[in-house]
Image (cartoon, rainbow, N blue to C red):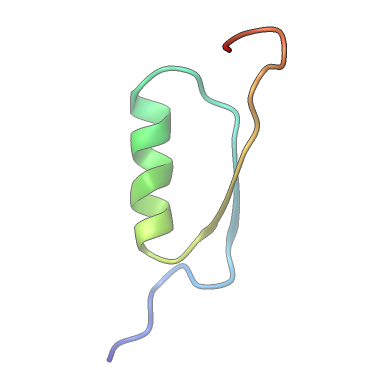
Length: 44
């Protein structure tokens, strides 16, 4: 099996709109470690 190209890379996701999380989803699919940070004042 081939190794994933982003293994060992960390990505900090500070996005709120759909294109950002979609991008980090693709990065995670390539084995990047994604850390999702959300605004505690927003959401539920």
